[in-house]
Length: 161
Image (cartoon, rainbow, N blue to C red; front, top):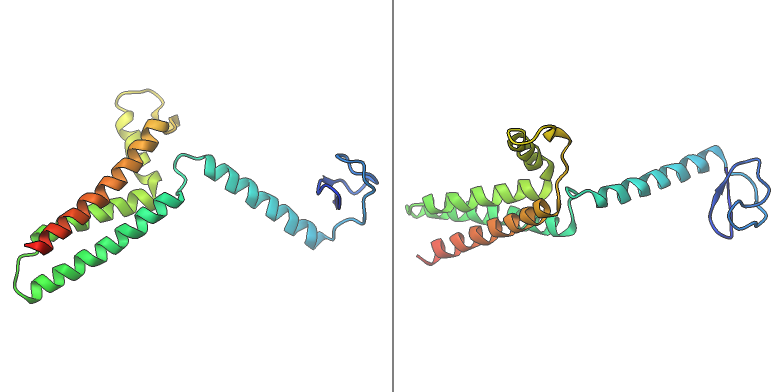
């Protein structure tokens, strides 16, 4: 494989001129360089494909996931503090559940989509082949945000009592 120095197009070893811009091609890549080049292209294609996937874990999802993990830890700290002082910590069990659900939805959205496909299987033929649409995408984002918001609200109201 030869790479054009002018436009960056990949060309076969037999070519003397670039197929895209007509520039004279240099020496062919070594086997190691060609392997690295192909891996880089495959990685770029995979990244482009994944970002088009509605179940791709976006930057927003990662932020919600990290906030949820912090929420679980804060809830557990308050549970321990309440146990030390002999107070009831039942109210703090709900935010832990909400935050765990938000973490799962944020970092592993394919789990909830699989559950949704099972539910849709009762209503639609070929539910295994269905893909999530924009409504599902936005409902997923809103649900994650509400789970975190309600969890934080419960923690704050429990601490103020």
